[in-house]
Image 1 (cartoon, rainbow, N blue to C red):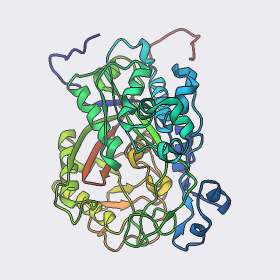
Image 2 (image 1 turned 30 degrees about the vertical axis):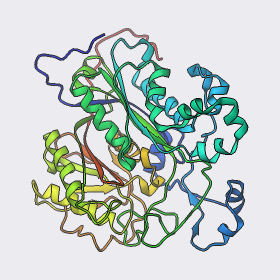
Image 3 (image 1 turned 180 degrees about the vertical axis):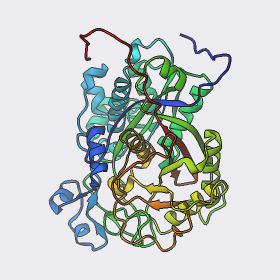
Length: 455
């Protein structure tokens, strides 16, 4: 069915109608929300036995700078290959990132009430993955497997260029299919591109997300003073003791549709995306891997402008929040400068970061923050951002519109729809910002039969 644009072009936003994800400590979004609500940190403390089994050397374990912690994702070795028409031989050389994203994409569509094969319209896909650790840590050490399969199938199964196209092939998605690679902002940039494709009528529905799975998972890391990694295996976002983050595995995807059509079709609207923006810091920062105030401030201002909402009405921001001494103050300064163009109010908007719960999920970090925020809007609760004891003295919270949400709070309304924003900043300068709003109230059901079918 061809995509057709209505004469007035007014769709009033993009609806989030489906979601799926697997994150450290959570095989389902229900468990993910429970962990967030209850303030659980899903970062494992690794025993020497686990580390040795994963290939760590005894000398490494004795090094005092080696941090024995990691956010672990269960079931990365499992895959329902026959369900997708993939034989065991092909599945053997597939990067777990391709396997799990494929399952996640199916589950996201299923949660929206759609099966791609039977959907008459065009479904787009925008997604990215990290490098294939499976290739270098597993397949490259198995010359018998490499010789048996040949170089091309191994490349197709592990090169991140083929994550989106393999998913589109398996699910018969016929809209735009774009692999996205912007480091830590990948999956939120994917959401932006999906929204643009929908608003430009390049597809009728879109999947967006990302995945990062590093194997073996049960390995620690070396702490280096002044680096991005945490000294103790905790991500203390916005705290005075913030010393860095730690990287973990996760996968997430959202299903998007033009809001007017989602409402007309009776889709389960979970939240509304009002505006998005992406940009790059350029050279206005101290180094290639450092964040930049000007770029972050600009992308936030652009997203607010695209959303056409007053910052006074935004009561939560899901921050990038890497807990680095440089990154956290720059992020709050950029937010404050963007908001100060519109409001002089102080302390009215909560801040949080899912990285304090699950660590940094790299290419999946942005979609993890987005899913957390949609769940918060649905439950009308703000889950705690963890490990805040003393606010970072380099951040002027008292003079800003923001405070760190360090405990579970009911998300009180302000007379209009609850609104939130999500940030993701990629190392290298690729910034993304998304403005969200709670779903409109569902219309009262019409009179119907006394007996109903529950699928």
